[in-house]
Every structure is written in C-alpha cells, then in structure tokens.
Image 1: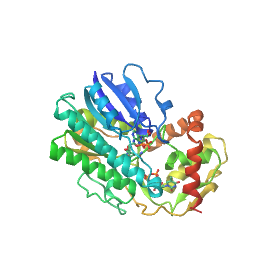
Image 2: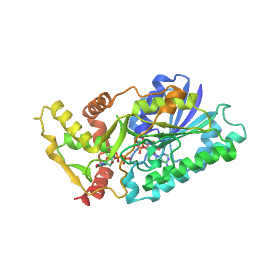
Image 3: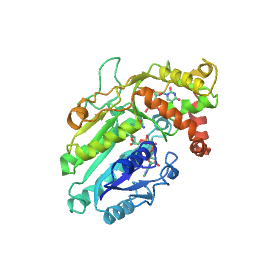
Image 4: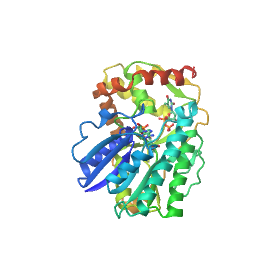
Length: 353
Ligand code: NAD
Ligand code: TYD
C-alpha cells in the first residue's frame, strides 16, 4: 500500500480527487489533511473516512508539529498539495490569508518533505506534487495558448501567491534535489464546488431566481475542464510524470462567461419546466473585477504526448452532470450557503451595482 498525504482533500478538487482515488487506485492509502476553512467540508468525505484507505486529519499545513507527526507515522510515497485559498475575488478583499496559506503553507510542507526525504524517512519513490493554476501565466489576448514555457505574469493576489508557491517548489528541486512536480490547470467545474465560483453560483442563483451578476461585459474567456478529468491528470502525473517537470492541464473548451451563463439559463429553464428565456432576464452586468484577466487557454500537448492524458468529458457532458449534481444535492447546498456564505455575498456583490 502506498501512503499519500493529500492536503485540502475536503475542498472542491481535493474531494473529487480522494473519491476518485478510492475508486481507481486500490493500492493507495490517503491521509487527508484539511483545516476545514469555509471552503472545506468533512461531510464531503465522511462516508469513506476510516475505511482503511482514507484517514482524515483536521489541521493546517502551517502546523509544523502536526506535519512532522504525519511524516513520522506514515512512510509517505508523496504529497499531493491542494490546500489553498482559491478565490480571486476574496484575494482582492483580503490578500493576507493567501500569502499565509498559499506561500507560507507550501513552504512549510516543502521544508518538512525535504527534511524527511534527506533522512530517507519517506518511500524511495517519494514525490511532491504542487496542484497549481494556469492563472500564474497572467492574461492572454484574443489568440495564443499558455505552454509550460510561458513566462509567469500573475495579475491577482491569488495568482501571485500560487506563482510564488510554484517558484518555491521548483527551487526546492533545483537547489536541494527534492523530487517535485507541478501541474498548472485551467478552470475546473463539477460536483462539490463552493458556490462563490462562477458556475455553481450561477446554477444556484438561477434555481432560486436571484440576479446573475456578470462582471464587466461578460466577454472574458476561460478554458473549462470537468474536475474528474483533472483528477485523472493528477494521478497520471504522480505515477508517470518526470521529476522536476511541469505539466499544463486544460479542457480545450474555451467559453466566454456570458455564453456559459446563457447556457445555464437555457438548460435549467428546460430542466425546471420554466418557459424558454425565463432565467436570462436575471442577467445583470455589474462592475468588473479589478485586474480581470481577459483570456486563459491551455496548450496541453505535453501531458498528452508524454503521459497519454487528454480530457474524456466534453463541456456539454460535464456541465449536464454538474447541473444534475446541484439539483440532486440540495442538502449539501443548504449546508454550505450558511452564515459565512451570506457574509461573502454581501461583501462582494453589494459594491457591484
Ligand atoms: P477550495 O477552495 O475548494 O478548497 C481548498 C481546501 O483547502 C479547503 O478544503 C480548505 O479547507 C483547505 N485549506 C485551506 N487552508 C488550509 C490550511 N492552511 N491547511 C489545510 N487545509 C487548508 O479549492 P479548489 O478549487 O479545490 O482548489 C484546490 C487547489 O487546486 C488549489 O491549490 C487551487 O489553487 C488549485 N486549482 C484550482 C482550480 C479551480 O478551478 N478550482 C484550477 C487550477 C488549480
Ligand atoms: P471564477 O469562477 O471566480 O474563477 P477565476 O476567476 O479563477 O477564473 O470566475 C470565472 C470567471 O467568471 C471570471 O472571468 C470572473 C467571472 N465571474 C462573473 O462574471 N461573475 C461572478 O459572480 C463570478 C464569481 C465570476
């Protein structure tokens, strides 16, 4: 059995990842370390916790004593690092938490990994995978793609903090030889995504007939990837990726924000038996995000050619599954849209009139 420390495994992508591993990797055991911030939810994984292959530990990646205990008690084959503050708008309102978790937290994990790796107290195949974002590359114009060679040029405190974490990870490989890997992935969507992000926010607001706040003119473009495809890419990178390398991961599904909102309106109108065009009247163009990147698009040839990964889900298939999930999981939705969520909605949207 291989032991992996997964950080942030109760957030959106981490939850999908540990659930996917339980299904597809019978030889893996996961220690899931999550601080359960507003974005983490123990209920996401409680059904698999304690099954012999999944152990939940509540705590922070900033807690050195706790990290040490985890490394001492488990001969780790790897660290798969998801834990982060992940929302661009929150990073504009409060960047300090992003510096703390994304930069200092990653640094603590790297230091602990290095200490145990140097003293041969980890498994011989040990790897540290930093789960990162394409936002480190900044904004594209109307043409072109991010490759692994694109210069880092982050725009938001969120992307700057992720860029810093990538730089530390690469530096620990080049300077100390720690076996690291980095993935830079485009926008994910799917089950368990906290409804502060575009797609689940719009789905819930359409269901509840609330305004649909589109930033600026709605023409910003993102490359969307169904979360299950991202999880499979991460498993491929851990198993087959070349140490020290970076892999871009993307869905090859570029969409403008307004196209997505229109599609969600039409699909939900039909699923909910509402008249055609009913929900589109809720669309409201609101004040733009400062420093809003125009376009992200990924060239994912390297991971295809070297590791044989490409997305299985089209956007049409993935979005249909995502809508079904939010319609079916009303208890999950009720549990996350509590006090903190309402507070955030007021902070972020009251000034965007
Ligand atoms: P998320 O906000 O849904 O989840 C983050 C998780 O980290 C939560 O469970 C939270 O409780 C946990 N966490 C926060 N601070 C912690 C700390 N100090 N110690 C331990 N746990 C802590 O984020 P997500 O969307 O699942 O993203 C996961 C990772 O993937 C992030 O590193 C993000 O930068 C990266 N990423 C996300 C996307 C995307 O589209 N969502 C795309 C590319 C890369
Ligand atoms: P988001 O889901 O926050 O992801 P990211 O900023 O990391 O790409 O936003 C996706 C896009 O949707 C981005 O261009 C901002 C836009 N957006 C809105 O127009 N309205 C909203 O309420 C939100 C949350 C995002």
